[in-house]
Image 1 (tube, protein in one colour):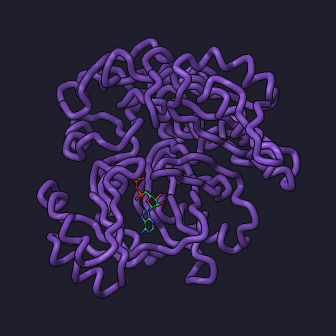
Image 2: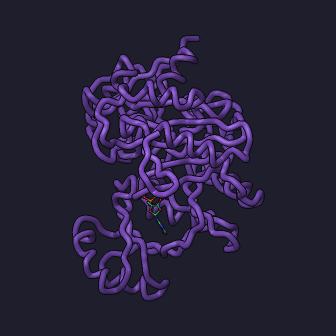
Length: 398
Ligand code: ADP
């Protein structure tokens, strides 16, 4: 037996964070990178540059791989089929991945599985959008079915008048997905992994906090979630994985809707390690990155128990500080238990450049763990200690 070679298409931070897991297990990781300077290149010695939209580049990259997997969901489905026909072991395969590539296909599948969807419709033009809004009530959420991420490709439409302004979106892509705006109490994420042979495991459902459409913070497990809601959400995620033939890690993003239906509605699917699973790196027996590699290689899955009582993941986005390392002494000294993960990306405003994980020993610690993780993340983002507002409202630096 020789150790397997895993190829990851896409060189973002997700591919980068698979590297430590591959190294620990003795696997060889290779990355098809978008450029010399993307996040994974400095962590993965074999990172040829190539275009994931070019079938020849994908075929070339597939040589010598035991399995091909992904950092993102944007590889054209036809290319995935062609790779399979050429004998490449593609995980997840195109029939599963299409549900993470196309939100209209995903909504139809969730209906078919009789799992909880918000009201939705495929809308071909402004008139159809207005008809949907008149039926379900305004506001309506309009989405591009393909290519959206971090809230790009999502737009609130408040009224029939506002719908007229969406003609540019219909000109660029049609049909679009219209959804009723969900009144949710929290956003949740159910993370699971599944192997080609059908073994699956779930992590506990987590609470995710989005700011401007970008995941900002995750609290694991979701605090005070009714047991039956958490169990139903985990079951739904496992069922989706089984029914759609998902392999590797999948995140099911959910809206919590207390007292309505089963207590949640499904937002969207991601078929790869996910920002809402970064807490597992330091807060679970098996990290999502190790689990993804085990799953796509059809190996037995690792335990998903939580370490400690509560785990907080806090992202940091590009801010004032260009020299992240200069802030490390202060950040590390402020919280010795914090685990800092930096993606090796150039700092640009609003760009995800790293995150902090912090494990709390008692569930009652949640507020303090959140605050401490946030302090570390803010120090790195700003390059200085956070200013706090002291009693009497005078600004004081701590
Ligand atoms: P992306 O693919 O960019 O992550 P999402 O479909 O997850 O897009 O939408 C981004 C954010 O927009 C969600 O995290 C949520 O806060 C909000 N959102 C999306 N759909 C709805 C909806 N139907 N009702 C209310 N809020 C929504």
